[in-house]
Length: 404
Length: 135
Ligand code: SF4
Ligand code: SF4
Image (cartoon, rainbow over all chains, first blue to last red; front, side, top):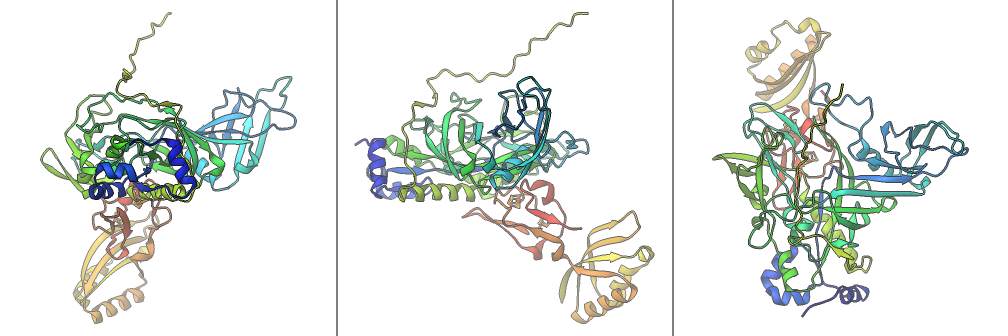
């Protein structure tokens, strides 16, 4: 017996929707059986809270008097440059942007203690930030300089727009070399000293809907503590990778592009983050409700940590040199136990994505649905799946001949 | 037997004095040096783990204060900001003493300052600036 999104929303309206988190549903389905659980359960909520570099926000700050065209000049928020190549007072702030005078890796490893992500966190916390700009001036936009405090509530629009979030699975990073390395997967100790992973495993959104049967453009989600929407597949979305028998990708695969009103979000779920020696990034909280439309969808949501496999990759050589291959496969139950075996050696593990916070997000989303504060949407278009023919390409360089 | 983790601040004129060996010989204490640093002004800063009888420890500390070595418990210098901690567990595989530890059922991280040796390994590893050591 299949359900529709409308029927589920009707139950939410009446306060009768049956909702479980992606962790809870494992036991529920084991007790009731897939068939019964698929009938009883309306929604399974997922969650993830990890560093997501392809995040950012766009703003409209309102016009100055006299008017000023920020584009073509230079605009900063708390000294972090923003992208102004759009209309006069719109601009985009990227999570990894940093001030010109940040020492970066000059004294290696750099600390990267501030950047666009921190500006976003401060704005969401309601703080004032410094908006400074210089411009070239035109007949219609004569002003050339601006220095003012601004906060989120002063702005017309403030929209979180992330072009790649919530990666469906990720690499497990290790270091085979004999020196410490500093990566976007954290600090990696020499000679397989540690292994860092980055996924909420059985709670992670796309791992609970591996073929994207319910998620697509228009899916309403928990984003940064507020409400957001999936606006399509994210960049590098790559459904055509090796999968387990149950369809779970065994490596990085699907991704999401998401957006949401920054003014409704919370600094608890959008955190400025610093990777020593690498850079600043934004840790984003995302929760996606999965409507249990049929048995197959329910079955997908019962995926367990031990059924999700990831590839161990050497970040001292294979990753930077773009040499394909894996040092082995491990599952998330092993990763979460604190140690894995790589090349016969026991290696201690660490996460970068918080499982505890992912669970909190799934729980918050569950409560919002149960109490009639959050309704599901029917996506306009599902994410491209394994039949899409998508091929993930490296950059093919075509050298430019120099003329003298 | 008692064990204490302390930070010593050495004035410059004591840096070349046999203070530690006196602690060992005269007060029957076992001294384990966890960290040591001499500042550009030639002042010394040591993190020590001292074990011995209560009476020996008390007398040893009295001697230190008489000769002008400031001491303070180590715990004061290490801070775990629980509000900033996301429980990501990035620090767990590198903390040598399990001062930072995780309850694997909930994946919840906790900090036990009595186990911390102020090695600072967690500082560059924590992406959320949740650990701070004033040393
Ligand atoms: S300073 Fe060292 S011992 Fe203390 S919590 Fe950090 S890593 Fe662990
Ligand atoms: S690395 Fe930092 S944020 Fe992560 S668990 Fe350790 S103290 Fe908390």
